[in-house]
Length: 489
Ligand code: AHR
Image (cartoon, rainbow, N blue to C red; front, side):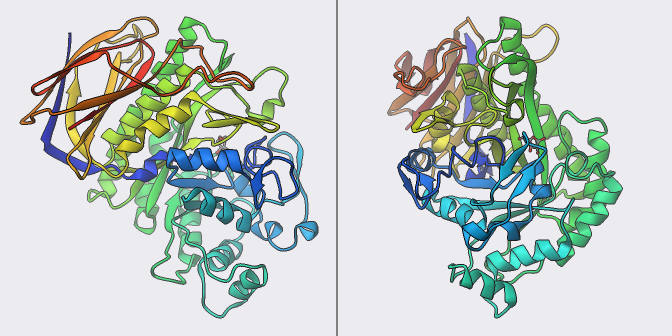
């Protein structure tokens, strides 16, 4: 029997709902087809946005959406995506699959999407092939109501009021696709661009996100250290990218070894956050600067028969487990991790929705995000669970949990069982708490189960009853391959 302790007297950080965000790039079928089909499409849409996808994202409680990239951000010139659609220039996207980008989805369309979903906007700017002037013009275009050329242009293009931009990224992966820069050089560039990003409205001042390291890169700590040391005082957030990759197998067709490889890789998120936080603590002990994990997820070999640069992959119960354990890790680090966006939203990598023509499926990952809505903006509680280590050559606890408290005193506990085959008996005790009522939900299945087009949904949230309430907690049998949520009053 594993011991699970929750301490409501130990009230830790606030879990910022923005850690439950998603990322949407002009890549493959994420934007075009996946989100935006155009006003004239036979696929039901409002102002060009797919109604099914918007409804799904809304129901999931998506708090923030990052756009337009990714690597695409550093080749994107925002003025190509405004004005009359028929007059917008086209570009050839060499990097992501050699496709023509017609720019019919641009700044106005992005904010229309955010409005329909009801989420905050996170816009990523171009450092590699753009200028500081171009970047500031964009900020002015989006956020200014002062009499100026950019404000006038926005109004002429049909948007009277400025939009709210909560986050603004200054470059993306500048150590790689965003310029192959050295950290010293990027830090200087960051300072130059960030200085020139003016504030047009004190109540609509985007938080500036600097490019931090990527979990898989050589020189990880050096990058984080130099950028924090030289530019930490000029940023509001530092990004971290980390993919639980397995480029040898496909998202649906994996071996048992492949399953555990991905789970073990995913669990390394904890180490990456810890080592980045340690570096950030040297320069920012007050934790003013947010650690923004603005790209994460499972990255597999693309599905057979698809353009490999479109990064399209299906999504199984394994992905649901990765989502559950990663979100538990984010909750536990919510003192520093206060924003994160899953890569990506639709049809690319670990998506929450997949589309095929008119059809859309909600993925197992989707159901975990929806289930975790109950953690949004709660207070993280001190908690601890004992668990077996499932990996001989590394660290993968069988059980990974987090617990939080809602304003009304309800305790939300989410537990992931990372074993493919073994259930776990858990005895939960909550300090100084008299339990009145518990309800629980589960996302589970065989590790390979997924939701397919034209079929009944195989993986979705169901009620969970395999637990017994005790005076101060519960006992439960957590099935293999499952994400379970308890609401305890
Ligand atoms: O999400 C796909 C790509 O992964 C992004 O464009 C880039 O930032 C990262 O390397």
